[in-house]
Amino acid sequence: MKKSKIKIFGLLAAVVLTGGIFAGCGSASDDTVSIVNVSYDPTRELYSEYNKIFAEHWKEKTGQDVEVTQSHGGSGKQALEVANGLEADVVTLALEYDVDAIQDAGLIEDGWVNEFDDDSAPYTSTIVFLVRKGNPKDIHDWDDLVKDGVGVITPNPKTSGGARWNYLAAWAYADKQDGGDEAKTEEFIKKLYQNVLVLDSGARGATTTFVENGQGDVLIAWENKAYLSIKDNPDDYEIITPSISILAQPSVAVVDSVVDERGTRDVSTEYLQYLYSDDAQRIAGDNYYRPSNPTILQEYADVFNLNIDLVTIQDFGGWDEAQKKHFAEGGIFDKIYEK
Image (tube, rainbow, N blue to C red):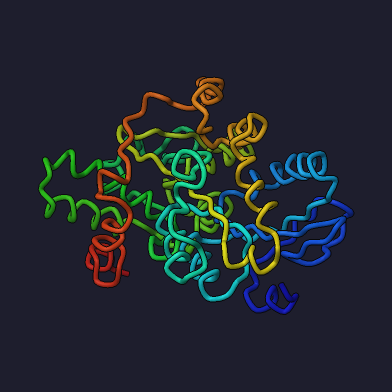
């Protein structure tokens, strides 16, 4: 990748694993190989740690150094950037639909979701609430988010994969409460978004709005981001787990057209496959993602609520159906959201 691309998109932050110098992206040599991982907002800490152990693994396996450049942003926006030319050897995005968008652009081959275990989702998460210490607005479940005077922070589902998970988790709760009456469920979601104070483009921006800027009473958040916020500010926040949430499956894929052009298919494939190793699974758990390995997940039973009622994207007919119905132009979100 040319350095000018970094300036054009303003998205890439170099995470260099060996030598301390950024030596270029997506190139291979006898001594060093460089790849680009285009990811979404909440994975910065996860991949900062993972890249180090992968570099050691790749060096031991091949004798070759590896440099990984990271790019982070709202998942939907990241997918659009890759489809429009932001070169990535691998993508590690918030949901299957965003990877499908890159496939639809002709950059990823059909069948990517079956290339790795667990639908190419090496870790999972769910959606929780982050509230201020003491829970002054007495927030316990989704219905508390539609009360008058409750300021909600959540990203924009048009640009953020996490925001789409947030929306669908709220929809699942309302649908159950309303007995499947879609008109009532739409009204519930409309009231929720009427309480949204700021609609940031991604999960990172929403967390900044809530934590650093002090806006809102509740942040609808990735579970891992909520835990990291408490880790950084243990006296300021607490996590509320709603009665119903959703199994969020961040997806990973090799960008076939890019790796074939650069000669980086082997290292890119291994980069994603090694996410399933025991060491990487524990790094995921330590960063508050739920390991896909059920044995290692049990090691974190004192961290995660493993008994939470989780719907899945299949309850919405899969991502194609959910996107078309809720988030496409003229979909339900467009209909109910009023600025």
